[in-house]
Amino acid sequence: MRDTVGERLHTLNPGSTIPGITMPATMHAAAANNYMWISCPNSSARESCWPSFFVRPDGVITGRVRLHTAGILVSEVNTDAPLSDSTVAWRERTMRGILHSGTLVRDRRSDERTRL
Image 1: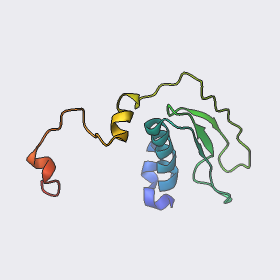
Image 2 (image 1 turned 135 degrees about the horizontal axis):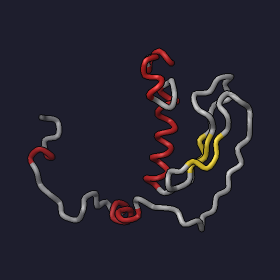
Image 3 (image 1 turned 120 degrees about the vertical axis):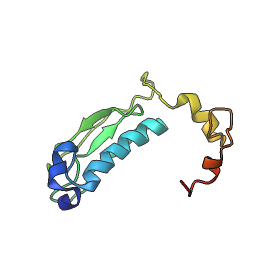
Image 4 (image 1 turned 180 degrees about the vertical axis):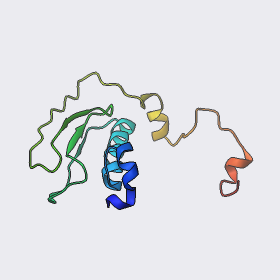
């Protein structure tokens, strides 16, 4: 899996495999975009792509185990903690299906998204 990334790019990324790069980033984004707590375990394989970790609703990691080491991560979930909620301003509108700022703009380029 490391060959897919390319050795010259290993130093530029937090992992050396596609799952090791994308999964932690995806969990950060999912937690912050959806304002939810996320536990992201690794596999039980001898060598894991990322260490297990826990993310708060604001995208901050609160705990992590060591990579390639057996361990248990215990994380506290405090639902009363004053955390930053970057999506609160538009969450309710989005849940109602309003996916724009309030003024819908009609644009030919937006209507024909398969053409340049």
